[in-house]
Every structure is written in structure tokens, then in C-alpha cells.
Length: 330
Image (tube, rainbow, N blue to C red; front, top):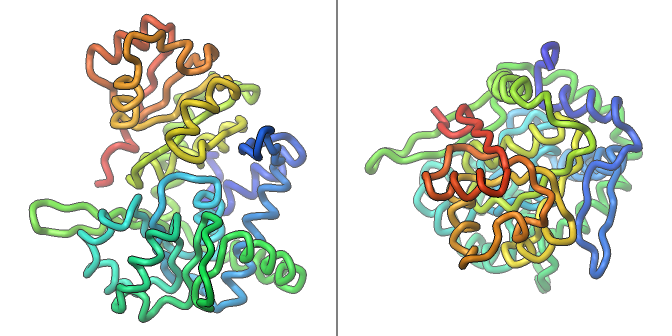
């Protein structure tokens, strides 16, 4: 990663390296759909092509109101590939605390997890005033609203647009500079709202430092997560995971998290400190190793958990690796 300057450069180098190897698995009914690096790259470019065809330009912002998901991850990488900036929130109520600051940033596109968030967004006249389109990740029935686009439709139309935009996508990606803003994490100190900006250079530096600590992880390892928040850790950790060349699974929701992990049998669990506390609260005397599918060897988190939780992971022979530089957005 030493010669990498931007997120698109990093992802592009990984695509060239791993090509047809398996990257992502996602639940598809009773089975698992397997997605290669090339398939993943194609979906990112489909979304980027659709955004570009709608007028998204380098320097534009996209608001994302969603928990962690495959669709969210792919959409964010598409925005990065166009030189755009992501402004993330995990849910609409959290976003409302920063409504004025975000509206002043005039996000050109909005990505939302579900119909519940869409209804709230459409009633926020100040927010939608400058938004060209609102994308929804789940399969909710939307009715007639030209401004709201289902994720699957965006990917489908983007695939058509990509045929004529391939060279333009490549040129835009190559022109992104390391000092260009990629991510803004909003925080509060009392009533004072602060937007913490991260350019491509800073993000790559953070990823590189964490990557060097995890060189012992093999490309045969598989990570598993469901991240509820949208802090710096949650926004960077899956980029870090793919930089390690490992396979990743992102659970669809918290119920699926506990069900699918038994079948997926990951070797790496990725969770924030808050997420780990929630997992621990579900133990109820059960064996932690069994609850996590019996194969987990490493927990990658943002902060070391409390003593009793740490002891439970130690007893289960699971090593805890805290990426502390991802914990603080400052």
C-alpha cells in the first residue's frame, strides 16, 4: 500500500491482483451468492456510471443514511471513484442532530437504507431541495416517485451507461488527488457541531498503518460483520478488510447476524466496541465460541472491550485486535 495515494487507486490495484478470486459472499435465500473481485468491480462501476450520467461531478457530496450493508459499501466506493465525498449516518434520527450542517453542504445524491428513512427524507424540504436523486437500498415498493431510485435499478441502468462511459470513469478516477476530500464524519461537543474531514491521503495512511499490523492474516481468512453505526471505524474497516485480500460477509441485519454466522463460520469477526457489548449481552450462559460459529480466531474492533468481555474472548481463544486509530475521528 506504500505507493497508493487514493481509495480508487487502492481498489484498482486489488482488482488487478485478485481478479476472479472470491471476495464477497451474501445470503441469497437458502444459499450463498459468491461474488468475485471482478464482479464486485463491475457493480461499483455500474453505480458510478449511473451517478455520472445523472451529473455527479468530482467534489460533489453524497449523504448516506444506512447501517452497514453490501449495497452501502458498493455505493460509497462508487462515490469515491468519482472524486466525491461521503457524509454518513447510521439512521435518520442521528442525522437530524446534524440536519442544518449537512443541508448547508448541499449533497447532490442521497442513499437511504429503507422506506422508513425515505419517508422522513422526502418530508425534509431543505435536504431534498438540492438532491437530484434518492437511492434506496432495500426492495420497498415506492410507488410513483421519479426522484427515488431502487438500488437494483441503478445498477441495471448503470450497466447500460457503463458501455459508453468506461474511458471517462477511468480518467476521472486517475485525476483524483490525495488531498481531495473523501469523507466527513460529523460529531458534537455540547451544542457545537463539527465536521471532521478526511482526504484520500489521510484515509490511505490510516489504512496502511492498520494493514501493517494485520499482515499475519491470510487470504484464506474470512471476515464477518454487521456494523450499526457510521463512525470512522465502520466506514474504513471493510476497505481495510479487502486490502488484506480476504473474503468478506456483511450480515443483512442483526437477526441474520446470529443465524448466518453459524453457517458462514468466519475466522475474523469485525465489530465495534458497542457491537461487541451487544453480542456479549446475548450470551445468556452460552458458549461464546459456539455462538460465533466455532471458527473465529480474531476480533478486529475499534477499542478494547471491558474486562469481563475481554476475558470471555480470551477463554474462547479469540485474539482481540483494536485498531485505535480508527476510533477517534479527530
